[in-house]
Length: 122
Length: 110
Image (cartoon, rainbow over the protein chains, first blue to last red):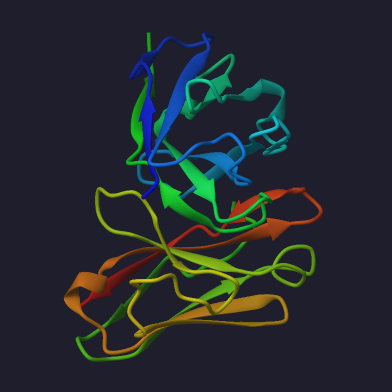
């Protein structure tokens, strides 16, 4: 059974870059024919899709965040990663990684990580 | 402000049937399938309904989804206390070329 686990710093200073990784276990990203995505949830608020990536490296991004977001995949580590630059307090949130149910980002996200809290503060 | 509109709250008593709505437009719900997620307090979201009305393995048949035009609904019958959670609808938006979520509905079991 595929499981996802987010990892990365829990505290990031304003204007710096937030970096998170999602490690996939119980299955391989390479050749999986799935899209893999990032979603965030600010405290007390709803879910916001950040972007998704295929094992080939093809990506889709939320237009509102696109200029600050880099999503990449490392098949050798069975991980995919998120970088969000120039962070502000508004980027404070629980960040989730998830798997789309098939080879397109418009499919449902059927497997989720437990989430990791990132606080932006000096 | 979310692209998909959900009521912020809903409530019902045990055994009752409740419905949560999700309103969108022709570029999202009108042309793509809808998913529903359940988020229990302090937990990650869980896929409840995909492709408008399909339940993943393990999801009780008390949960059902439907779609008509640019709106979708999640129905929960035989309401139980453990159904108290936040519920989110989601779909793809062709204009934004991205995934969009509703603002979420907090379901309270009275």
